[in-house]
Image (cartoon, rainbow, N blue to C red):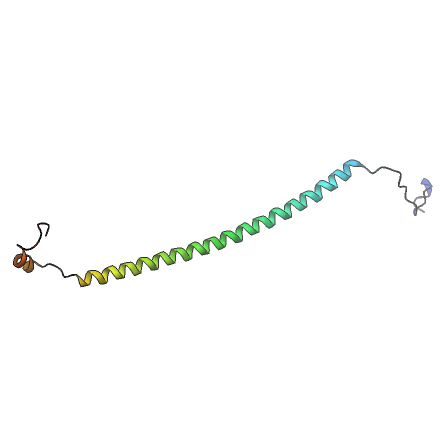
Length: 102
């Protein structure tokens, strides 16, 4: 067999030997770094999704503001249509009854 020169039984494991500490530390660090990378990835995806929702809310808010401005402009236009305009004929005819600013 392959291990005949060492006189070891391949089915017997020596548990009294201490494992190499550097290999264990490196293995633990690799596992911890993978866990950190996974957690950071999840956090980044949540932030990106939250930012997309924020942009949608902001777009809706801008649309609502624009619609409100249009409604106010329309109401102002209708109010201005009801107010009679002073023409030159009216100014001369009723000038003595008007305040000085007109």
